[in-house]
Amino acid sequence: MNIGNALAGLSLLAAVACSSPVRVDEMSDAQLHTHARDLLAAVPLIDGHNDAPWQYRRRVSNDLDAMDFAHDLSHLDPPMQTDLPRLRAGGVGAQFWSVYIPIRERGGRRGDARIVIEQIDLVKQLAERFPDDLEMAYTADDIERIHGGGRIACLAGMEGGHSIENSLAVLRALYDVGARYMTITHSKTLDWADSATDDAVHGGLTEFGEAVIREMNRLGMLVDLSHVSADTMRDAIAVARAPVIFSHSSAFSVCRHVRNVPDDVLEMTRDNDGVVMVTFLSYYVSEELRQHGEQLDAERWRLRKLHEDDEDAFRRDLGAWRESNPAPRCTIAQVADHIDHVRDVAGIDHIGIGSDYDGTSALPEGLGDVSTYPALVVELLRRGYSDDDMKKILGLNVLRVMREAERVAAHLRRTEPPGTAQAPPPES
Image (tube, rainbow, N blue to C red; front, side, top):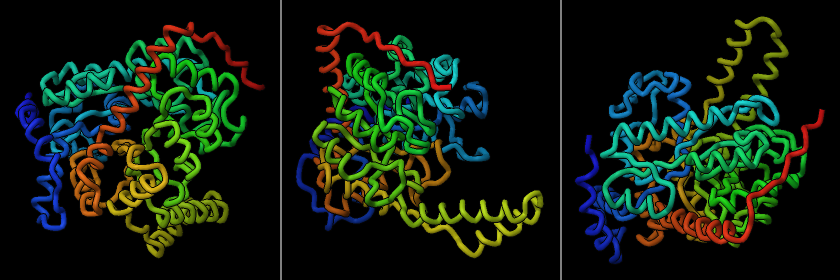
């Protein structure tokens, strides 16, 4: 299958075409969409987070024959949001595939690292199965080369520091296998770092947590601060010697979800030269929808206590509440509002895109799958973002962060030995 090689020769022409000023206000809708595709051909759209690998594990036990990535998978129940034809339609140039494993208990469990290796192996198998369209990438140069050749660069990002099982040696081994970022926590607090969606036990990072950040910098693994508490964000940026990323987060001032980034951390990210990859997950995008979700949770709790073991009554009354209180809409414009806010606080050099496709069913209208990125580009062009601004948001900012992380790692590997810190045993 060779969907994309024909695009390779267009990249240089598109780059030239996009270098001149564009009067967006004079363009028709069709012209705007054409221009958006020219931009996507000129620079690689680098998406920070996609959970399709976990869908393969959960649905078909990683059997690539059972769910053919080469065909549209939107007919499945529930629909997949990602497949090769729609990645092409969306103009994706590089994808950080989340090699996610659930964390159901604080601190994680033994055996998590094995599952991460299996998920990285799945990403590699996908790239090997479709060599005309996909290729594994490990550096910024790899991404540019692969995109220039008309293919999609595939990278692996670990979602959750429980993956390393409290071991710097395991962290190093997972980097060697191919992981190029690690989200410090997922939904639960670890023995060495607080999560945004669990109790704060440490007030941020422990000493071992700081050692993890330093070792990631020495390796060249990007420090991803999505999912961590605000104090963990602050501690990690203070310790970091290379730029950090937020692989799929948005702005707390626009939507007050604990997973989003407060303004003072946006300023720290600017000073660190990092990047916030704005997410599409609706409950992190729409403040109205977030509040509706809180009200729904409260009503669910109230009805559960009221009806105790009467499941029929619980379902009846909860359904009636939902009918009387429909969920607000979430829109592309609200995603763009977050991008506006990150630009206003941190600057245009610190914005990226991290969709969270196939990790959620709650997506904005018009951004329902990986084919829809051009619609977001059009929305931003209409808001007055220049071609140079768009190139930075689509991928150049992330490439800069990766190159600096690679430069720092090259220096630290020459000047520092591998870390030897040991995590203290978990409290009983």
